Image (cartoon, rainbow, N blue to C red; front, top):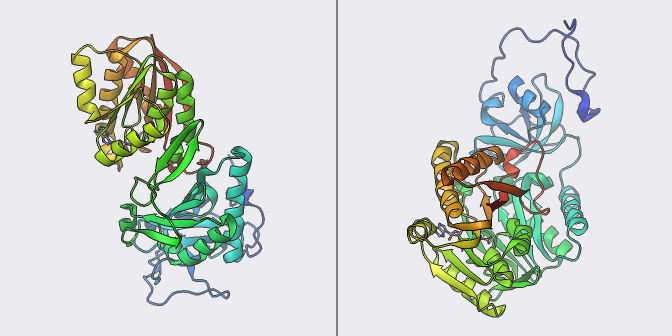
Length: 432
Ligand code: SAH
C-alpha cells in the first residue's frame, strides 16, 4: 500500500514556474467550478490564463494533446483563437495552448514550456517539420509539409506539390494567424503559389465558415507531380482535399509491385492506384463516381501513355455486386473508399459498408489474387478493420493471408497520444 499520494507526473521535466510537487493529501471534496467570467484573467506576460479541472490535468498527465470544454474550470471570457497560459487545478503553469471558443475541443497544446509563442516559435516548428520530410523522403518535392498536431502546429495542414503549397487553416488560432503562417511558408519554401483549401466542414465546428482561394503568387490550371514513375496531375483549387490524396502516395507506388493480370481499382479519384496498377497489369478497370475526377483520371492515363486503363463512371458498390453476379474475375483489386463514418454513431454502418465491398472483392479474385484494402475512417481502428476483413474472408470461404499492414506515408507522422492522427489503414492481402 502506498503511504503517500502520488506526486504529479514528473516526466515533463522541471517547469520554472512550478513549485516542487505538493505532498498534501488528494482533494477529498469535489472541486467547485469557477463562475463564468466576463473579463479574462490575464497573466503578467499579457496572455490569458485558463485553468483546468482535475480531470483536465489528468488528461494532460496522460499526454493527450487536447483538453475538452468540460475539463476547464469555468468558461473563459475569451473570443477564441488566443494563445493561452494553462494552469492546473492548483494554479501552476503547465503549458501554452490554442484556445477555441466554439469547438468541444477547447485547448490544443503548443508547448509544455514557458516560452514565447511568436513568429520564431512557428518558424522553428515549420523547420522541424521540413527536416523530417528531407530525412524521410530525400529528393521528393511532393509531400505533406505540416500534419497539424503531429507537427506541433494544431489546426494547420500544408501539402506541397512541387512549386505550390496547398494549406488548410482549421481552427480560429491558425485562421487568425494566417498572414503570419503564410509569410513563414513563403520564406521557407519560396513557392510560386499558395492555395487556401479551408473549404472543409470541420471549420463549422469551430465557428468558421469554409473558404478557398489563392493566398499568394499565381496558379494556372492543374499542377503536375510524380509518384514513382507515374506523372500525376491534380487541380489544387477544385480537386478533393488539398488537390490529391498524398497520404496514399507510398501505397500507390507499393501497389505496382503487387499488380498483375486483370486489375480493378474502386474509388479511383484521379488514379493514384489505377495508374500504378496499369504500369504492371494486363488491364485495369477504374471505378469512380465523380465525372470530373474520372475526366482527370483519363487525362492522367493519356499523359502516361497507359492505354490499358478503362475508366468507368459508376457507384463502386453497384459495380462490385454486378461483377459478382456476372461471374467476373480479377487478379488484383484495390479498394480505397472515402470515409464511411464521420462520428462514433456511424461505426456499425461503416463496418457493414467495408465488409460488403471487401467480401465481394474476395469473391471476385482468382486464387493467388491480391487485395489492397484501405480505410481512412479513424473511428474504425486497425483492429476493427482487421476483424472486418477476417469476417469477410470467412463469409467468402476464402483463405486470406496478410502480406502488409500499412498506414499513411512517412510525411503523415502519427502522434503517439493522439489516435486521430493514425487514421489510414492499408492492408495488402493475398486471397488463396
Ligand atoms: N484512391 C484515391 C483516393 C480515393 S478518395 C487515391 O488513392 O488517390 C475516394 C473517391 O471515391 C473519391 O474520388 C470519390 O469521388 C469516390 N467515390 C465516393 N463514393 C463512391 C462510390 N460509391 N463509388 C465510386 N466512387 C466513389
